Image 1 (cartoon, rainbow, N blue to C red):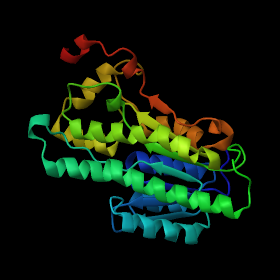
Image 2: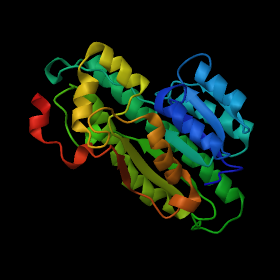
Image 3: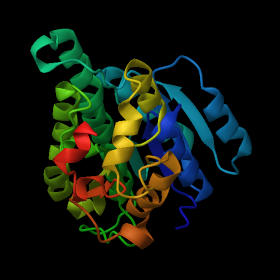
Image 4: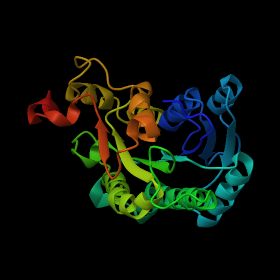
Length: 278
């Protein structure tokens, strides 16, 4: 899965799943451009940069702003010379019952989870197409030789509902993200740009820890709902690295587009109602 010479744009890469995805791509010899909202690179990004043999650069960006996204992607084009991969991992979630969900929560959730993913993918795809056209390749582009990969990070919550959380705005935003996959796969196929989504199951991320601080029994509930691990744990970010790398790799995933990949430790394969009350 050698990605030498390629560049990946990873949103939400300062921590959590985004940082984990950036790390596995860097180990595959891919240069990394990380986008996040913070004014400075996190300690995780600094460590990745110091430990990696590839170029790792951090960019402050509010991905819900088209002007900021356009400006940052232009800078990445200049700094790296090309964009080959885009992983959209930035996301927010707030536990709020449907009947009391505020317009503010709904707008913020969709602005970051859906619009942000849309804008970054749009700008990255445009960059990929400019590169492909300037290389004088024939169209259509053979995806095993060139092209690009766009991966949207969705969620198990778009497959099964859980009584442990009230996150209707979040689920709707992630369903909207998944809704982009097939039409974009059709539009971008002539350029060899593959578009897929990856839905993590219940994962011990920074976001999950934040939710657990508000709901102490949340993780134990998710442990019961997950087949693998014997009810003693949920997934770790590292367990998504292989699937993500496959989707980004021309060699491993070059013939895969328009698809949704669910990696959930078996949680969605059974979900017996009795488990919810014990």
